[in-house]
Image 1 (spheres, one colour):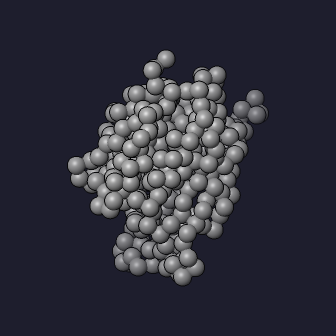
Image 2 (cartoon, rainbow, N blue to C red):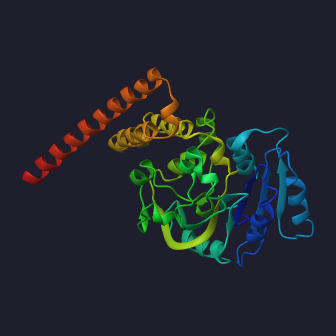
Length: 319
């Protein structure tokens, strides 16, 4: 076993108002396992680094504070964490999220230690919104907020086990909830180097290959939904196009050749939601029809493969 059992990363960019609580929620864990905390700051321009250093000033348990020389984005900052993570298991949270169950680490590591056929485990997360009704009058912001729900399980249906085909179809796992076995993930990150959004989802699709995730039906973390969150800085069209790029990369992956039907369906769904977004209303006629054409293309492929699947199932039943 590695000297460090679990490496916890906190990814921070301009979260001076929140990072203290995130750090304290990690330091407050009660566990027999040896934990290291790695806080990675993406060259914040507020006083995040001062808050981080002050919070960790007298902490004796293993910890590191790493800082990018310039703002490099979530992928580079996540890479910085993984390069320095020495634990047998890893997990990370955004600096504006936090944990609310002090035995979270203990419970998740215990499970993975005793269930080698799972590559990761996760749990539900509460959603606390600080976005005002006045701010929600901004239709673009309203489409990106999670504040209309109280937990992730209200807009995602989780079974006790999560399989790859479910994750392909955008089953959203709260970032602060996932714990995974450590491995050679730097090569994986290189695969997604041209993407700036939905990196957690892209990595989860790699972690779950040839395996499955365990779900704990408890909300052990909090997702703070606020207007200055990272996801609020990008329009919905950008997110959808980014998600489509991830799915198109899966089509080139040998493992995911077995899940083409699900990938086609998921790409079609991303275009569907893009076309229904508030941002789509301001696209040029040419852009809109181009997206509509792509939606028709992928939807047609999904339906065709679905029909072939039904035919094959019928043949097998007749036999």
